Image (cartoon, rainbow, N blue to C red):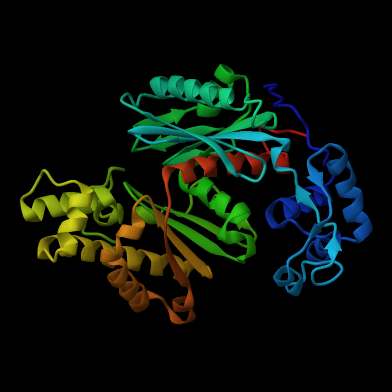
Length: 405
């Protein structure tokens, strides 16, 4: 499997980047529709697309466009008639995405459209930065091996993405502070790139998930949205005014650290009263164990107990729902997204707090902010790793570090 981290995209202008981004996130799409959405001339679109087709990144092979897409204005020639929409050649490149947790490493390979091809999970016992980076290098090497399958050929690998919780300086690839991992000022990108001799992009895990939703998920057609993740922590990614928000200092959307919980509760970040002290899955489980006097319970046992009607277990979930709903209302009142996706590894099982969460949101959302849609959706750790891969794809297309053009 040839590794070609320096395989350049033939994009000479910002217009070319915009055209490829439209094809990648909204394709198959006709040239005329790209021109309409970008306000470029059709000649400019054709000029931008020609080198991409020649290099094998984009194709315009004729396909039949379904009637429903034609009705939405995606067809160039009419309902059911043959057209030549532009679409990205998925296997023109490959990407690796890695997600780091205190207990596991999750890795995926994806194509250019962030479609998952292979998945690997490895348990983690040593969370020191040195040990984790060595394990990440091994996992990436194993995933690279999966790309060399002659029965399922993949495109050349162009980069590796790493998603970590906490305060991450994505531009320089440094994890400034990750309370869950116990890391401070770890230059993950440079250290891992040196081990693997590949471009490495490091991102906050929730922001990476938001990038994936922006380019390849619910955010493709949304003007604004937020992704709120609930698990061992509570995170939030924001897509506002055409961009995933990073914040002036690389920190934004820290919903889990709004001070909306009782002040006597100490968070993993060292501060008091954070949303996570009540609303994270770890906090819910700790509360159920404390109030029921059953320290042997795991989270599934706590959920089962609450479903059976145990008042102590129900109280823990109600309390979590109250705080999450209030935090969501505060966020929506401030930035006004049209949609909030509430996601997590087991969030679909948390119907126990859904009603109380929506009630608290309705009580605190101001005016029309209450019209924001709340969508509850479960996802897996593979999705987190896919988000890391999506950040590589975005940086590659835009020519952002470490992909310079």
